[in-house]
Image (cartoon, rainbow, N blue to C red; front, side, top):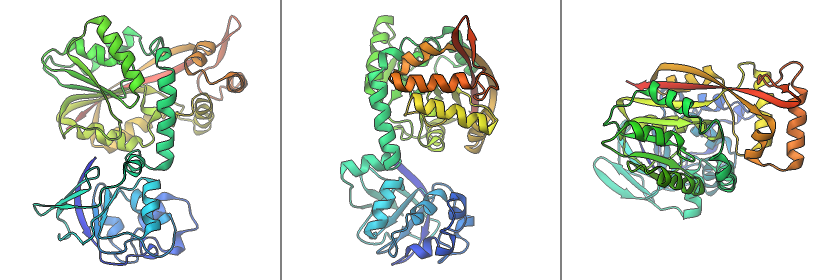
Length: 410
């Protein structure tokens, strides 16, 4: 993972009270932490720091108390990485657990405030002023936790890999995932050129990647997913269909291993609700997309009614613990626009599911299935889920609203 940003310079012994003063610790509002980060040293820092900027500091950064709010304040202010000659051990541990990138260099990196600094987290190197400096490379197990976005996200991703790996064959038979009309509509709205380079993120069994491969000819389509077993199914289907201009790679959507501006089209279909850091995933998709290129985001929707959305997402998380959150359409559009994209197409598509078939895909076990059924039946009277749950000839049926968003990187 590479991070490039403007340097903010701090000295030795920056303690946690300077990072986030104790008077703000009574809240759990991350925005409050971000609004007052490093207020004890530079009152103007919080208002001027930009997402992706880099803190360059001296010895013993994060000394003082063990408060994890210090790390949270820096992370939620949008700081891309902290580079320091050394870190207080508890701060270092908290940073790994919360997913704040950091590199320990032994000596302070010589650069000025405002200089562009480039970080390679995996190699442990820092480039500033045309010179490369070697930091301490993290052990692989810590690096994996950090790259996954912290300990909670790491455990959730490990769970997702296990579950999707175990159910990879079932997902390949899902009616909505393989729906030809839906896939063709997505590609039609995207309107790829024959020479476009396409990346399908969190491709799963590769259904959207297959359709793009039919429309582009001069370059390979790449489908990436963090679950190898899903890609093995995709590769088998690819062989059966004789598709040549397509390759699959194991890769996390939140840390794409491609250079900036590598693709004309970057797509993601029915996976966004599993991302532990959706903002980071969107940022990565935008980064690897060329200026003038297109980002395609397709996912199920949750109600704009906050109470219904919460009830719906509780059901989803019970059925599949790797589920993070389904968003409303305005929330998804807002994330794309916040990343500097212009939405050029928004098309809705409804899909009916019978409860039994929906549960069979996830296979959560009889006890959980009974609880999910109870919650779904309980929602029929006043549509608590926003899914229009109903009975059809005695069978429990509901309707997913989905959206296809095509946005342009200007």
